[in-house]
Length: 221
Ligand SMILES: [Zn+2]
Image (cartoon, rainbow, N blue to C red):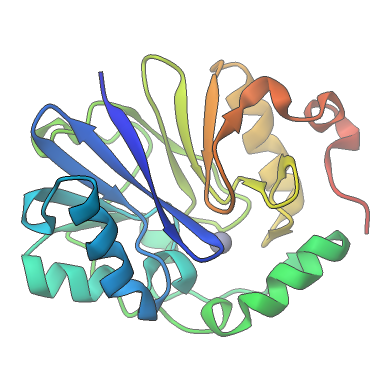
């Protein structure tokens, strides 16, 4: 069963999926986080040379910032959805945390990622040849190309669909809230157990506010 280790890059959470002796890195922090990522991988007892794949949950530069550099340095393929390649779209920030996050991320949200992915992710993509045995889900809303991973034991790597800034919640910023709401509704039927969000620490899916699952889903404006 895959083990998921958190790689903290400031306010961004990346994850290292450890499956027997293969490693998959999910997200890569901001541009300046390269050394920080390598240090944490080493601290966990691994080497970046052992990473078989970089899986980008979406194209925002606070998640994709070091992808090109890691790829060039260690010859690691990058997987992401086509819709988020070099795309910058307006984001709506909701509530005080949304406004703060939009401010914190303003450079990363407005910078094209310049990534040339090796694998264009789609729903149901088979990544077993990279040692990744999880369902690849297309869950748009935060961005059009937002992808997530659901493991057999209920571990769910969410990207920015969910966040845990002050408490577990739906994304505080999104390109398209109605679409995000649909994605969350779809996910509910797939019974995730533990959520690994793109910002903040992992949390139990049941810790999300019950209201989040209905129409009163969204943080108030
Ligand atoms: Zn994002």
